[in-house]
Length: 338
Image (cartoon, rainbow, N blue to C red; front, side):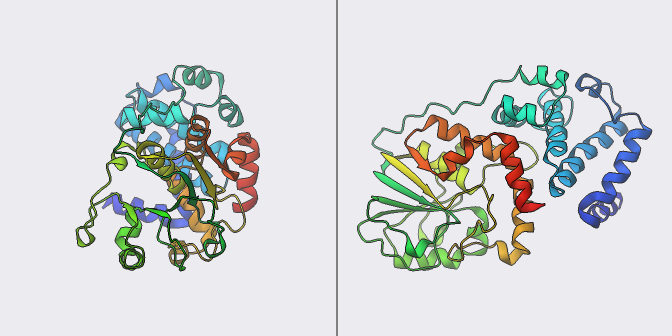
């Protein structure tokens, strides 16, 4: 009964009312200005209030596009989880903190000296060394990965050996003589399975990379998905990052060009030709903002940055974006979503 009531309160104004209540109790119980080492001493009630403050504080501040406040709470929460001071997967929390452990970012969100010192104790994320030169790895040659911002019907595909999609495109394309790869996600398999069947009828030579079995068309879960790591509380690779992990761990390519990706930092990140379910879920910008909240925008930004740093043969506008400092990225994000 209580959980239902709290869930109802959280729906009011995207959680602002419930956060106000939680902040009141955090002041009442004197847990609004805790250091990490103090968390271990909390009792059950105060620990629950603090956990709610961390979760709702990140959510409400992110939706309000106050990224500094959102990520200050996020990092303190995940540091506590990684140290076993709060409930959660310690390995997932450590993975998240290693990905986000960038000095420019930590200075941008204005972490205090105590938390900065703690973050120095975490490694900086490094991609694992994986041998993709074996015979079992599919060779793509010069490859093109097409993103949501690309005009799929009017791309010049002449110079590419392989064309890679994150979802089956809505438009007909001349792919004669090309290696075709489509990387699926669970949402598409569940809600748009008919588009997959239709695509396979038109392009039966396609290599489908699926996160689950699709027995009807003889597709089995691809092993690459098992190697994808997540952070706590939904922080996980988005379409580009998931595709890059899969392509760099399970395929060979001489060069990979990225087109149509900009971390949703433009006014129109999705071209009308891109097969997206976003517009079905609500106002496009609101849904994109919510998606970045759940998957964690800066986690995905630094994950992409790490992959591109490791693989110099991946090119595209995304590389220029990841060379920008976090303050500049935040300004771009705020300009679109505030």
